[in-house]
Length: 163
Image (tube, rainbow, N blue to C red):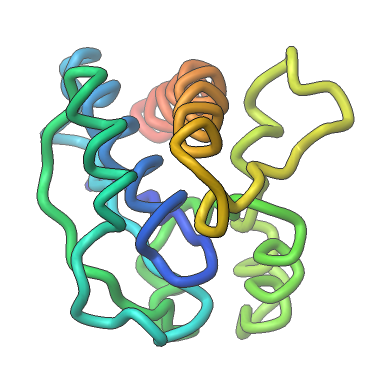
């Protein structure tokens, strides 16, 4: 049975596609790409059909990541097929939990940086859209740091299913 993770930010062109591509690489490195499906979406549909922000693409490519992306808007009906919905900041967390059809679905929503013990109380990944490249590089650092803990959590869930 496939384990499904969806990363969600505002417009699905900066943070969430970055997280999707990084986490997909972590899943492949762990040999779990046949068991874990990774995608992303935005809370809004402003950029539906667009590719990732060129700065996101540049930072990913500069750090050895590859992958295409087409922006889309998160739909409440997706909760039934998802195991984890990963919000990039507390605003997304609240919006997604309000969209959740059931309390069980709301519990699937977690903040990405909650999987990074070093994040402390700073659990939001800041939106780099209105800034320069340094914001995109900082975003990548946060995504990479949290991906290790997220992968461990997903692996634990997969092992629990197999038991």
